[in-house]
Length: 115
Image 1 (cartoon, rainbow, N blue to C red):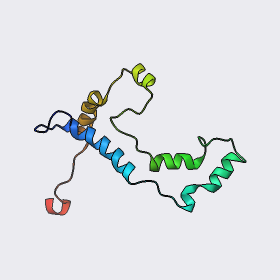
Image 2: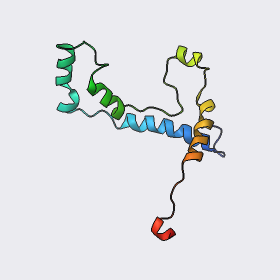
Image 3: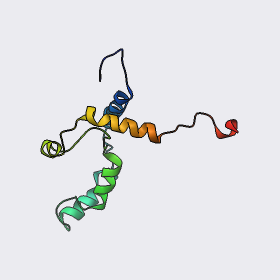
């Protein structure tokens, strides 16, 4: 809990959203199929390619579809994190909260009903 059970704030919701996203991605597991095993890609990279997957098209596709990029958590190394000012989620959550409140305008009434 960010502060305590009787209290909540928008920053807590933002932090919780990051954590729940990571949890939900973890519990959904890893799909194992002939396609997801990537035998052809492994053969291409290891036998006829550079010997690493960093430049392979499939790596980028999987990083975009399978990896969760947190909005307020910092996944960088401790050294990089310290060099950038050592901000933690409590430091970054207020800025993310302000951005959401400034940019997000949910439609609660259907346009036809509003007209």
